[in-house]
Length: 128
Image (cartoon, rainbow, N blue to C red):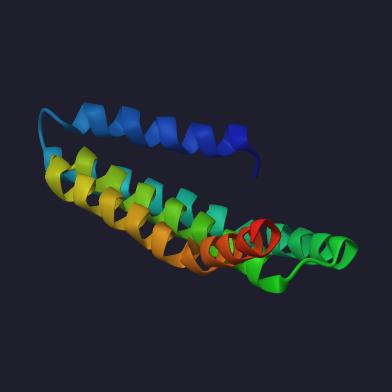
């Protein structure tokens, strides 16, 4: 599938949900959530290609595996937090969606702290 196909799936789900809004609004939300899950899991299936490319990149540049691993964790946290937040906001629970976004940002900060500390130690060695 391509981006066009995924776009069509998303647009179709939204258009059907808009049609259902006047009669059974909750079914529209379920439909959009199902389409969102389909797109989410299809996106996750693309991760194999990305992981292979990251492994090759790591071999070519001889980077510490921790850096690429952290980058992948940060990407995953962002993707999941945005997905869940969007569903909550679409369902009318914007406050919960915002809290999920904040938690995602804090999680990214926590995951990246070892790299930030290593960078600061390196700078301290060069400057001190």
